Image 1: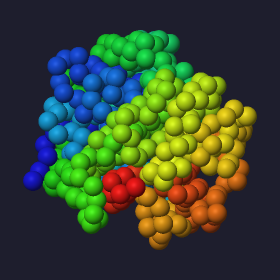
Image 2: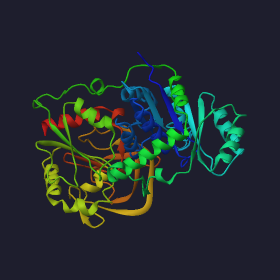
Image 3: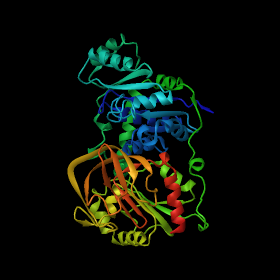
Image 4: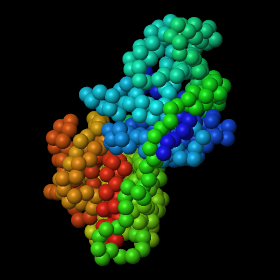
Length: 457
């Protein structure tokens, strides 16, 4: 089986060049012309896919070769792009930047090569003219297997500036597919962990995405970009399928019916991979989303709880004020029901966060710090839990400015193997809580085990 979905990758020489503006604006502009656009993001980032979803009306999906392995990039892409007219993949960092010290692994260039997709290079031209030719030439020649099909010039100052840039690039032989002026209305606010998520600024986000679409429509050759995407090579193999990889229940004596798995959402818990809920559903669960900021009770018949990442530190007062829900979550955990918490979820389960009472499931406190913890991690499960048996190897990602004390319980969740050796997280009763963000598509047995425990707890 092969895929012929037209596709292109939006990359840049470095972070801050305007990838998100161009990729999101292009997605929205193409969707406005009636195309079904499949949005994707290279790397572990949760926030950009929210803007992509707003631009396209489809779930934003991540492609991360470190978390999932290069072999899953094409199947996950095909799964997300199924039935679409075109796919746009936003890169991460600079085109050739990836996991530290591991070559091209997890880089945008690696994803472009695996997907056989042409690259559009977004160049911040604000402080250069003729030098842009040297820059683009270097990126074109660095890896001949990466096909750079065009350049979009960003932050162009004037018509004269644009003319100089275009003249310089004629010698490189890479077409200029767009030139964008500086535009304040497309800017999106940032804070301690990057862009503010869509869920926290819905009306403003809609306006920003519309402005991005207008800027790309006015400044880029959409027909040429679509033509470039249609030139992507055929992609062999089948799309990823949650039902096929997770299989059916295997534990004898499980109760019939579909257990309800409550998944935290809303503005405080915006970090999640779509494949997690798809795997839970394929494993036999009814997945119900709830908002810990507003919902005073868990969904009816909740048998298991998943609390992913987000920004509980921003909403600590509101989360603390929802005392009824906090007590219900504590009672659910005390009963032994499966509870999986990552990063923000870990903070929410602590006794307190920045001095405010939280759920009290874990005898630990959490607080904000100035120090950023960021990076990929190789890990092994230290303790048997509702997610994995001891010895299970997984890769994850940490991204936070908080600290939990103590950092690990009597039964730690993970032993981090690289870049440094340590234990972290908590396994207590049916609770698995950790800072580590993982992608369950890399180990679908995690979802299967969790749902099976929901049936038997």
